[in-house]
Length: 557
View 1 (spheres, rainbow, N blue to C red):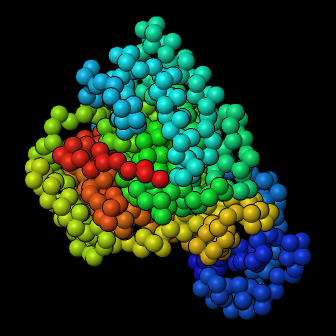
View 2: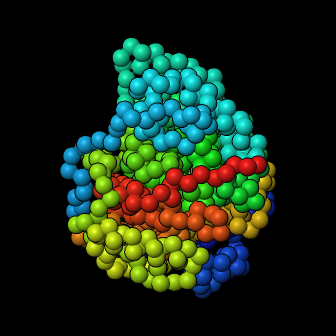
View 3: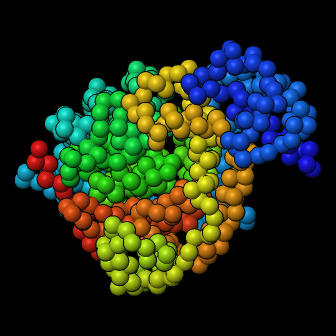
């Protein structure tokens, strides 16, 4: 057994031996003889300690495996290729909460064109759909309206990488012709939207927000975009993201918060949240690996849905972490999230990580939560943090709405330590960028930026990556037990829950719950795995009991 353990450590030591701090593997390093002294120095970084005799027994294997690594690197595997390993968030014996597919939203014919046209900017998808269906406005008119707003505000907010005007106008013309012919497809028909620029769109650059990729053109349409266009929606812009999905700084600058230009919009779905908040599009598609929908939605006062891992196809999307990446909508309301989610979720043969599950949703008729058992993470609410006051009011509101509040706690696990999963996968996704030294082109070069993270990821032992995933398996089982009998649970937008549920793959809705110092604040509702139907209904009932999602930034700049 001891011999097996020692041999398993070889891969970790080789990572240390074959990677230089300069960011590339030089021929000199590859040819350097691996000695006992070299291994003894390397093993200190990963906290293991072999004797000289034990190390001597490894040397032949170390030489051979270093050659294996060099050969594999020559394959130049593109970012679009997933590992032959799929993360599955389902606990043993898990049954999907929804038993059948059903979707219905409240729809009326009472929406009227506003006296002031600019007021259209803050209409919901449902309201805009009313106007299009009743032919008070055409898709061409609506598309032009939002493109003009993008052009007006982008110079200050810096939320758009590319305006897809030619494609948008062609699709808007087609939508109007279909509607005129009586071929109305549904709520999204003729509605403009934006997509985070890690989603590919034929004929346009897909920059991933990063200098090394700013001229990249991918000759595919991401499945999420395809499904929205099949529903009749109109892609009007590719939205900014912090370089390679971190933060709000991209190769063109820093995306701003419409409520305060002295603040960034947070990331990494920076442009999606900023543009929706500013009324420059009704909704946009974002993505989350570790907070990239929750964080900018919280900063900008939008409503966001991070779906269950495996719900939405990631085909055509940049890979940061194959086992943690999730696509989702950023909108004005929970109901709009449900509408967009319904259009983009479901099967796609191009993404092997997809898990088919029913989605059963209908818009709530009122604001009652009677009969709902909603957990709250007591220790998270008890700690001192910036939004404590508003979050406490949210707890009271939920109780007043008739829900039973149930104290819960997250399983006791080293969540932050488990994030080496993201480190290892992102390092693999962008190994070529690191080893070619093109990471030096990126805007951010500080210790907390991706270039440093990608380099250090080469020093994560394969064993510890596997152990972190085993701890993740424990999390999935234990969190499932904690959620037994609960319809959902709530937590502050930021904290241990954000990390835990991104690792476990659980869905959440983030929505505004007040203001602090003139800026919006938010809270999150977390649902059962593949339980988006009930989660959205609960969050929507809560949202309808207030009006924070209807507040608008002044845009006086």
